[in-house]
Amino acid sequence: MQTISDRSHFTFTSILKHHPDQFQWDSGFSSAHSVSLIAAFKRVALSLPFPSFTMSEQPVTLPVCRRLTYAVGHFFNDLCASMWFTYLLVYYHSVLGFRDTNAGALLLVGQIADGICTPLVGYESDRTSGCGKYGKRKTWHLVGTISVFASFPFIFNPCIGCGEKTPQTAGLIYAIPFIIIFQFGWAATQISHLSLIPELVTCEHAKVELTSYRYAFTVVANITVYAVVWLLFHFQSQHTEDPSISQSLGWADVLTFRYLALIIWAIGTVTSVIFHLGTKEGGVQSQESEETEESQPSIPGYSLISGRLLLWKHWLAEPAFYQVAVQYMCTRLIVNLSQTYIPMYLTNSLSLPKNYIATVPLVMYVSGFVSSLLMKPVNKWIGSSMAYFVGLVPIMVFSFWVLVDTNMGTRVYGAAVLLGAGSAVILVMSLSMTAKLIDDQRQSGAFVYGAMSFTDKVANGVGVMIIQALHPCQTLDSDCKWFYRTVMVIVTGGVAGVAALCLSSLLIWPIAIRRRLAVIRGLMGTYDDETNSREINGILN
Figure 1 (cartoon, rainbow, N blue to C red):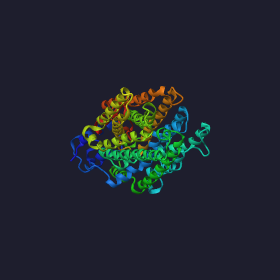
Figure 2 (figure 1 turned 30 degrees about the vertical axis):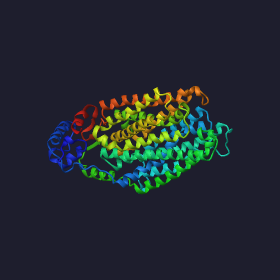
Figure 3 (figure 1 turned 90 degrees about the vertical axis):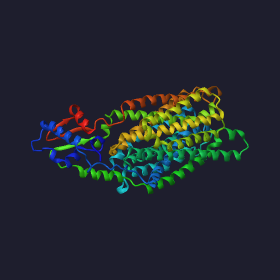
């Protein structure tokens, strides 16, 4: 049996329903009665147990099969994102021969398009009802999947009729429309898939578990991409006697990247079909909505606007919203920028053969996969904030290792293990923090995820463009080997330091919606939370 000390799941309306005799109502109820109302509420809330309307102590979870079908719903996106972040700069700069700034501009355009589309898709996803009984989240997921399906293969193919001497402007004009369509589809798929987490499960540990499943498949997607790249490079080296082709990147690798894009395009299509066939939207939310409606009393002159009805503008007034947004942005900067620049670091700073751009990221994500499996017990043991800090430690060690070891050679695999494990931990914990922030605010969950993603997309795009513009050499010059090593140190260790500062703010001011009751209206008039909500929040919270 639970009492009011268990908090969080009890509402004022439920108390009114089950204990109406504790309150005196009359047609002349006014603001003068608010004090007695609060006193009566406090007397009931603090003294009585509530066995009849507490939530089940058993956490709402999903069968393993449904967890797996949900997790593969982002697999297509993960495949494309792996190729986008890891190989876009390499492909356009080292294979097609684009200048640093032009290659960076393409990534920036994509990130800005993604950043703009993400909150808009989140807002519309919350507002629209979806296609019939299909569900609004799955409807947007389908729209996004079709957009990615129709655009992605063209990004990693030269324009029709283009060759080595074709002006780069033609390549830019050709690629940008496909990039924008792809990023819209990617955003729609990502936001709708993330927004399903609070709708499928309600228990915090179940959310972390579902996020871990999701990230585990993200790791599998990355492993798939890097394994295919390694195989393609291996087959290429077996069929050529030119060491320059087998060891370094160039125009001869155009066909390799074309095959890579088509292979992951086919795999992603299959997994998206599995998701849509195996995932049912809205079971938990519908059940809770029915229970909530049944628990609402019919009391003339009384209405309660609680935190359960937060809209997008209410989120903008929540300090925790900005805390989590900055934390998520730092997390994505570490994960995405390190993923983007590690191929450049391997080939330019360490002068390693091109097959390392497949094997080193592969090692990173294998270690990430292993660490993601440990997230649920670790989160239960020490909590999400401390687990996040644990993930920052190997990232900082990696940064220091890169700084002091200028000729790492095969030792780079050991460093990759640290970076992969740490990145997996902080990403899973960051996503679980976002789910914790949303809590029961599922009606605006997509907007929250969209806003979080907006910060990370724009920050990543601007970061890449700044790095590309600061490159001191126009060509791949041995005098500039230090540059990408410095980049790797900053985007891991430097950003990890900022993330640690953000984490300290979450330890001081834990994630919570601080204004649960905004206004009470009725025959009593307007009840201003600025003057009175402290006492009510003290009772409810």
